[in-house]
Length: 267
Image (cartoon, rainbow, N blue to C red; front, side, top):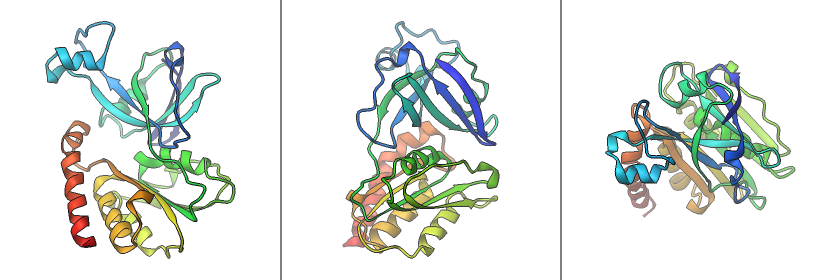
């Protein structure tokens, strides 16, 4: 259930959840991009109890299936069983943001997970982290988990200075905030990474956010810079002009197309 909420920037709402429902919740590794899928049932629909997404999908029409939204675990305290999630908020736009804005202590929240797959490798010579607001919670968690003295360049694109948040890190981190100011999402990120004088050695990169700029940066890193795929955590969290359900429906084919184009260029 929701314990409390906090507006940490004009377009970011922090929701802390807890309660007995988290007694079996456990992150299975040191991943810093752990995520959960928040479940939003349709209002007014009588779902079978006890509620199960799998059972609903097996027994009810697709149009009644609950909607899922994926969010990074910003923090997890197993001792007091408190889970922190940060929601990007753009007024009445979308589903999860408006929910977070009106969520009240004691309100039930349904989740699936956690999943995950990235953590800063202490053996890397340096780290590159790039993302928009949707990737900010994972980037912040990753910077906070950097080994002492680890070299990292991080680029985060937000609308303006008011969207910056404080990030604590023990690494040798160069964190650059880029302000969109009405430009296309990710345009400033592509420019910044292209202008970066890439240090030599083994790089581990984390690049996530809007699919358009992620595709451009994947090509830059894989084709132009020759970064091995094994050293990249890279994907489009969302796509401009497409809702979450629509993006999930085409994401696999979109990724295959990107991989095919990349393979041709790499020869």
